[in-house]
Image 1 (cartoon, rainbow, N blue to C red):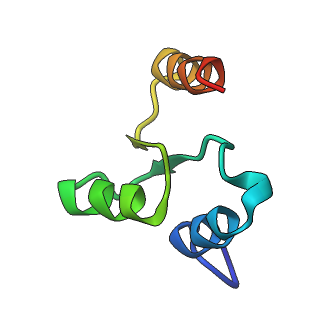
Image 2: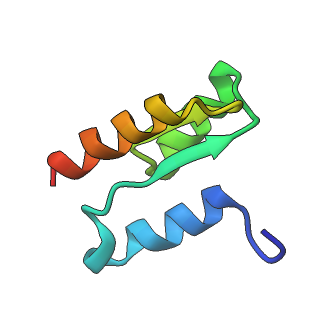
Length: 68
């Protein structure tokens, strides 16, 4: 993203009570354990490393939407 990264965007969303329960999933090429930890610490609910397998992505989206 040109003006902010996903971690910054997530922190801003989580700071707004209207978005506290909206699932946020990281879809990133940064797939190391430290990257996953940074995403979760920023407030993301889950982390999927690329390449993304469509079935896995759909499963994760359904999983998180069903928790709402």
